[in-house]
Length: 394
Length: 223
Ligand SMILES: Nc1ncnc2c1ncn2[C@@H]1O[C@H](COP(=O)(O)OP(=O)(O)O)[C@@H](O)[C@H]1O
Ligand SMILES: [Mg+2]
Image (tube, rainbow over all chains, first blue to last red):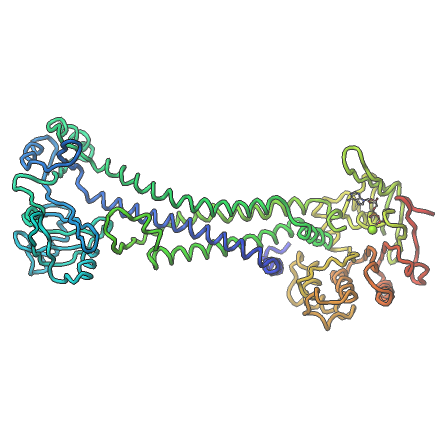
C-alpha cells in the first residue's frame, strides 16, 4: 500500500462538491455564519472580560457609602479617621465625584476629584504633571478621557468647558490634557479635576464627600475589615470589589443572553442540515456509492472520499467564519454586537476592544462544528457503503 | 475458471415473504469463454452476475474464481477482487453525468492511486480502442446513448480485467448501436477475455463467436 495522499480522491471530492453546488453553497453559508457568530461572541466576551478585570483591579478594595432612606447620601469626611483606626487598613480616602449630565449631547460624564496620592489615577496624573506645564491642584483645569474630548470637540469646546452649577451659574474649566488609559471601559467618559473644583461644580460641602475608599494590606482580610466598618457605621453601605465583580458579571451575562438567542437560531439551522444528512442519502447518492463499489472501490475509499468532501466544506466554512470574525471584531470594532456587550457607561463614544486573541476559542469553535459535520456526512455513507452493493445498482 | 456450485440465493423481503432468485445452480465457465445468459425478466440472470462479481453473497453454495472462494470474501477483499478481475458494464451505464469522459474512465483507477503518467496511458489506450478519444473532455451528460455506452465499456476495461460482465447491455440502444456493441464484443473476445452477458435481446442469439447460450428459468438453468 502506498501511504502518500491520494490526490485523485481529493480531486473527485472537490468535483463532488461542485456537482451539488447549490446545496453546498447553502451549507457553507450557514456554517460560516455559525462560526462567525460563535467566534465573534467568544472574542468580544473575552475582550470585555479582560477589560472588566483590569478595571476592577484598579478599583479600591472597599468602598463605603452613606445610606439614608435607601438612597446614597454624602458621607462625613470624619468617617475616614474612624476607619483608619481599624487594624489592617493601610489607607482611607474621601472621594468627591459625580455624574455631570451634558444636556446638549445627552450624555453623562463621570467627574472625579483627585489628589495625587490616589493610586487609580496616579500614573496618568504624574505623567501630566511631569510633562511640565500642568499642576491641576487648586487651579481651574481638568484632564479628560478620549470619549469626553471627542464629544466636547463636537460641541466646539476645544480649550475649555462651561459647567453649569446647581445655582445656574457657569464654571469655566480649562482642558489641560486628554489622558490615555489602558483601561478603557470606565475611563473613556471620565473627567479628572481637583477635589475643590468638583465640590464647586456639584456644590458639595468641605466636610462631606461622595464616598470613602479603603485599602487593606492583606486582600484576604477585605471581608473582615468590611464587616468591621459596617459595625462601626451601621448607616453605611460597604461594597467590596468582589461584590462589584458579581454585579458587573450579572449585567454582562444578561447581555450575552440576547446573543445566545441569535446563536441558537443558527445552531438550529445547522442541526437541520445535520439531521438532513444523517437521515439518509438520496437514491442518487446511494446509487453512486453502489457503482463505485461495483467498479472496485473499497468501503475505505468511499469513506475517505466522503471525509475529504465534508472536511473541505467544513474547514473552508470554519476558516472563512473565523477570518470574518477577526475582521469584524478587531478591524471594524464589532458594530452592533459591541453596543450590546459594552453598555456600562451612558456615554456613546468609541470604545476600543483590546485585542485578546486566544487560541482556545478557535479550538473550541472548531471542535463544536467541523467534526460534527464530518461525522454527519460519513456515518450515513458508511451505512450505505457496507450494504450489498447489488441492492443499490439495480 | 469460474465455478458456481449448488448456488441458492434467497431474498428475504420481510418475515413472511421471500423470493427464491436462484435454486441449486451449477455452472462452470472456462477462461476466454463468451457466455450469453438468457431468460425472461426476473428469471435470475442479474443475480448470477452479481454473485460472480462478489457484489452479493449466495444463501448457500459456493462461487469459485481461479480456485478462490469469492463468496466468502470480506467486503474489502471483494472490492479488491473486483478491481483486479472484473469489468462491469451496467444496463444504464451508471456513469457520473457531470464528469467528463476521461474522469469517468479514471474512476476504477482512483483507489490504486497510480502515477499520473500511468493513469494517463491506461485511459488513453481504452479511449482509443473504444473510439471515444475525440470526446475525452466532453461531459458525459452531453453524449449520445451510443457514446455513453462506449465510455462505459472503456471504463470497464481500463484496469485490464480478465472477466467482463455485462447486464442487458443493449437495453437502451437502438438496433444499429446494438449491432455496433456486438462488434465491440467480438473484439473483446479476441483479446481472450472471459465474458458473461445477461440479456433477453434476440440479437445475441445464434452469434458465431458466442461459445454457449444458457437459459435461465425461474432461478434454474434449463439444460
Ligand atoms: N435486492 C432484491 N430484493 C428482493 N428481491 C430481489 C432483489 N434482487 C432481485 N430480486 C428478485 O430476484 C428474482 C431474480 O431477479 P434478477 O436476478 O434481477 O432477474 P433478471 O436479471 O433475470 O431479470 C426476481 O424475482 C427479483 O424480483
Ligand atoms: Mg436483470
